[in-house]
Image (tube, rainbow, N blue to C red; front, side, top):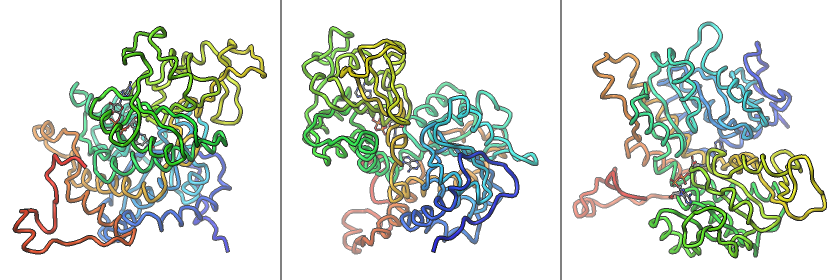
Amino acid sequence: MNQPAVTTPATQDFKVADLSLADWGRREIRIAETEMPALMTIREQYRESRPLAGARITGCIHMTIQTAVLIETLIDLGASVRWSSCNIFSTQDHAAAAIAAAGIPVFAWKGETEEEFWWCIEQTVAGPDGWAPNLVLDDGGDLTLLLHEKRPELLDAIHGISEETTTGVHRLQEMLRGGSLRVPAINVNDAVTKSKNDNKYGCRHSLNDAIKRATDHLLAGKQALVVGYGDVGKGSAASLRQEGMIVKVAEIDPLCAMQACMDGYEVVSPYVDGENLGLDSIDRGLLARIDLVVTCTGNIGACDAAMLQTLKPGAVVCNIGHFDSEIDTGYMRRHWHWEEVKPQVHKVYRDSKPDEFDPASRDYLILLSEGRLVNLGNATGHPSRVMDGSFANQVLAQMHLYQGRFAELPAEEKTAALTVSVLPRHLDEEVARYMVEGFGGVITRMTEAQVDYTGVPADGPYKPDDYRY
Ligand code: NAD
Ligand code: ADE
């Protein structure tokens, strides 16, 4: 029999699409908990000692079912939290409803406007009875930016930031270099159990899912162009290959391009001889055969106006990188007519100016999630098993920052403590161990003779810090 959601909220310190979705959300959260063994082991291990007692966390990560398990883990360990989503299309409304129904302040719904997006984040940096954050949990850096630019006075009480994704880490490193970062940060992304897991295997799972939910297209036998072959690109290319697509890869970095060759993909450039000199330099023969483009670079202009003009009619265009800077949707809005097929799916007619179009025209592109990250806009993102690693790291990072009490350090100690760093390797190994146990895997322990021979401790760390997984 279905169980009801745990509580009814006493006050309305939240904003979600539809609270009546809470029971559905709660049922899915309970399943997700069984698929997140590392996070649940950490819950069990630290529940009694409550290492986050007194922590007040402002969080900004896609408000999904998996994030609900993260939020409730932080609370179990003693924290109070306020939450928003880091993307206007990524909230799962039943997850947000379940969190609101449990009395947790959450401000998120699928299909926010840009203005609503920033309003939601603002609701999480202050709360009733003078609630103000002392920790930040971010994905992409928008919450961090808001605190630094609009509410800098709040930074005095903040012990640190844990950042989820590649793009957010790049922004933090830029702030650190430029001297504007005010509090230390943990780079969660570069834990092995995050980027070599979530970015790669998460996208392998969720990219083809998103494209199929959006278009109902058969993918087999068609040609795909994956732009960027970092961790997300590797997972994305695998995702399309396992659908039977003929996958080509574009890269700027010879090392990643080499990896693509070795993985059996054809490395191509949208531009003749790889030189982007505008429309005249487009490899028209190549782009005229491409049925699907996915950008995975974290860069701007990965699918630029010249590419959009020359792609095969009917091609699907989408982005799985953090921001909507990768596809030149600005050009598409200024020059072409957009017809909404359904939420997060548009036919963009290249032979029609905005507001004038012929529905019989075949000269269109199918744009997913308006160029925002497709796996969370058109599907439900990575599965719980994958997010288990990412979010176990988030919890350990929050504990680490809270223990460091940066905000209470004497001024002369703060400069040295202002870093963007990864968690120690032994914690990464601990998360991995819980994940392997969750799969029922058995890890081999070295004999004493093997320890002596290799010089590697039996209990780790097993690799030097600069080892590349
Ligand atoms: P990465 O740095 O490992 O890979 C990006 C790759 O793109 C690099 O190899 C780089 O050389 C290449 N590149 C840059 N500009 C290019 C261009 N113009 N043409 C071709 N290649 C180019 O980063 P990543 O971890 O793979 O992350 C990529 C993006 O995805 C980031 O924005 C990250 O925040 C985001 N991300 C999204 C999800 C998701 O679920 N959608 C998950 C993790 C990360
Ligand atoms: N990023 C990618 N997939 C996600 C998910 N399911 N929940 C939260 N963040 C994500």
